[in-house]
Image (cartoon, rainbow, N blue to C red; front, side):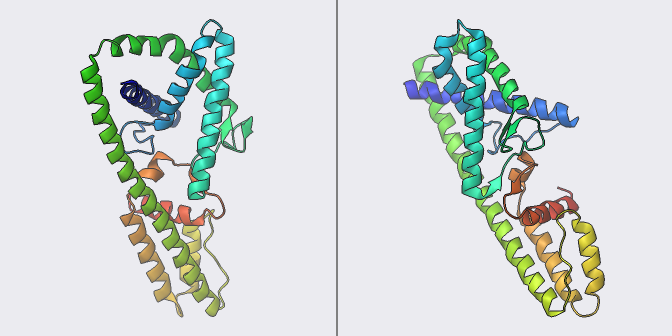
Length: 266
């Protein structure tokens, strides 16, 4: 039964984390931002894990709010750093980047976010968790069992769809990589040394179009059409949830995907 309660609390705090992300990013961007999680559902699992870690690790520090604050900063920052490192290792991609923020560590964590997480940790331990626990403890065990199993089933389904989206994104980037390499090989045969610039994709394509008007215009059109097709097939859920995502070694392929998705109005 303890596992069923963990699943329920994990879901509740994953949803609260998602809601906080939506509000924070909407205020920051001055527009409504709905998609703020890797999964399709309204949850951010990293907040669920973070909340459970804090609840079990800091319960003995409740009499010491200042110590609890710094402990929350340390634990949540460690979790965020570890998550960033693991995602980069698995996908060779930086999912978020705080390198432009002051007092950041390798762009994975920064002082501003860590401070906010510390404040949220205080709110969690002194206000939110006691309030939620009060009502969760009133739910009959049978209902907890049914709800937790249903939530677990939903999470598994969402994870499968998300994994499919991640594989689709990886395949799209690999396809773009091969496409650009073949295109560059064709440019070499024509003694054309211009390349697609990551900083100005539109201008690069205009320049290449002029260069290829005679000898290789068909190759230019083919690349354009294939890039448009790749962008059309990729649904873009991951990209919209992580707009600052970038590839670690060569970000051109991801920028090309974003560029052609924006051109088709997504």
